[in-house]
Length: 147
Image (cartoon, rainbow, N blue to C red; front, side):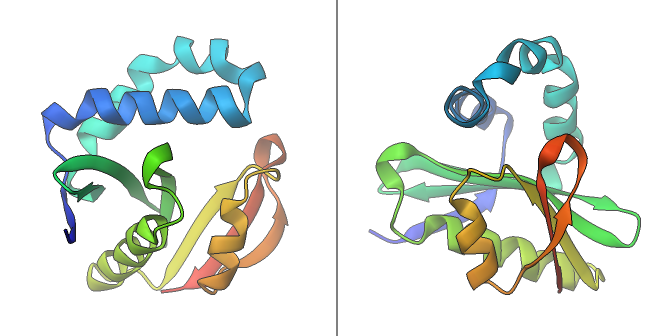
C-alpha cells in the first residue's frame, strides 16, 4: 500500500506524543523529566503549527510525522519521527522532502534543523544536502540547506 502524507489533526496528538516520548527515552533519557515538565509548551507548539505538522500513514497505520516552524528567515525543522516498525523504508526521507518542498512553496529560502550528535538521522540530513554548521545549543549539531 502507498504512503500517504497529510496534515495532522487533533486525533494524531496521542501518536505524536508517543513518538516524541520514545525519542526522548531512546536518545536523551537524561532529559525526560525536563521534557515532561515542558509538555504543555510542546502541545501548544504542535497545535499552533498544525498547518506545518505532517503525518505519514502507511497501510492505514500511523507511520510518522514532522513539524517545522518559521524562524526568522528560515524554515526550522523541529521534529521528524518514524514509528519503529516503519523505519528503514524511506518514510523519514519522504517527510524531510515534503518539509523542504512546503517551506519553499511558502517562500522560505533556507532550511535548518538540529540533531542530537548520536542520532543516525544526521546521515539522512547530509544525504539530503544539509550541511553541518557546527554545534548549537545543548550540544546539538546544527544543519542548514538552501530550500
